[in-house]
Length: 600
Image 1 (cartoon, rainbow, N blue to C red):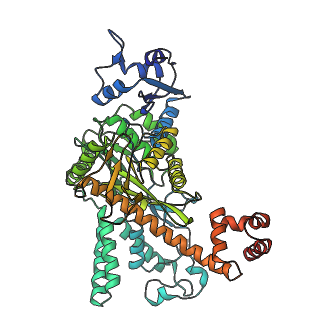
Image 2 (cartoon, rainbow, N blue to C red):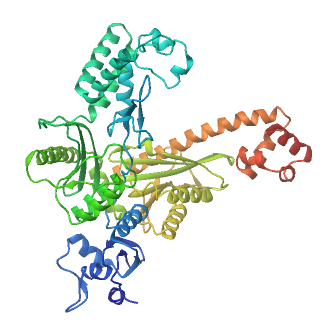
Image 3 (cartoon, helix red, strand yellow):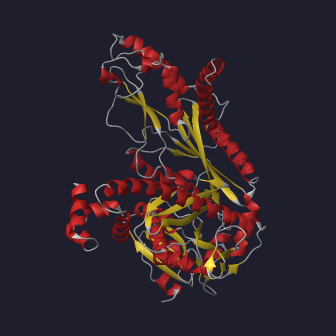
């Protein structure tokens, strides 16, 4: 069936649609209240079947590549919205906008029903009506919490009151000691009120921390002074000053988008009680332009995914967009009450939008100064990458004679390594090919929770590159892949510098670049970081195995026998769970009984 024939047979029902190119690669996913009407709007049927000339350049380019269409019918437009968002995150279509930041932000809270309450951190609503929340905090929540325990004499730890005995915190004047001393609730409340004022006023908090830092420095307590210096820096990072005077204690969540020719940036501001308490932002790589409706929808869907936030505030957006009503309907379901989603045109609310836009434009200005941009543009051109490699995942495996086999994934984003996103894997596979298959398969299986990047880089040659492409194709994921390996010298690949040059492999080409080429150096830097991560994890795993191996050896099981067992079972946990008969097939019956006795 041709694309035109499929379109003519579409139902008058809500659902999602998917465009594919001649190689059956996914180009675009969209949602529709009425599939037939929505999909037909992409085309002009007379005098010939072609892309609608009124569409954006990005959509026209996508339609020109589309040769087939799949669709899924759902019950409602809202269901279509949720399914579309989920599939885009997992499959990363070429012409859709993908936002990866869908994490929940932390809140600081206090349970006022407790006799001697203390502050802590949560990311969700807690089952108590006596809890007071402060936040959300994009950065610095833990630093703010640590600071209020530095500056006020609250109960420092959850278990302190149970001990019924004064501890070190009382001795160093950081706690009133209600665990043993008769501290009145009025006196303790003074410390709670102090902590609240510090949480709600960052300027006051930073000022008090600076005083404490100077005191520590004068007392030659430089390590403690250094910790406070770092804490002040983190707390200050999200600070945005505003001259906007709100007469009442108003709360707002503010979302604004600004763009350049290369990237867009989404800025979020959180105003609580008339003050901006935190902000966050995400860059979005643009491919042949973008649709602000899609970007606003994606930003709001990601932030208000499915979990009701502890503090519900009216939402301000930089401008109205076509899906604003269905997005408001979704957020209302999450909030369990009518959500307020506004695009103000004047007044103080508009002033907040302009403040957010000013910060967005400043972020774009800084973004153009990234040193890697030119190198990455040239690499994209050289390797014919479908996307600018803004976020990259790099893979390597490590083992020693088949023992302590591990895989590692390093992550690069926007000019630096994102170490919080690194992942490590214990592997069961025995050979290099199977190990990479296991590592990549496990990563693909996690795409539903952690969306695909723009590019994969593998430490390996053409064979592993082909493997990665097959895994992605079988899961319908649209993702560029390149591999890098040492050229063969005397039929062996040499890692040592100077022995052999690195070769870059793509789906269609092999590149032998000069060692001075910045594109090669950039790929080498990422490969080396993944190798370092894999080696470090291997060493930790090997050390743990060596300890257990030593304990087994004390019971008469030699190192050679332990290696034989690990090669067969993979891990000590599997050996522990194996039967006597299974172990005795590799060793003798007495050794098998010794091992089972050891684990009992």
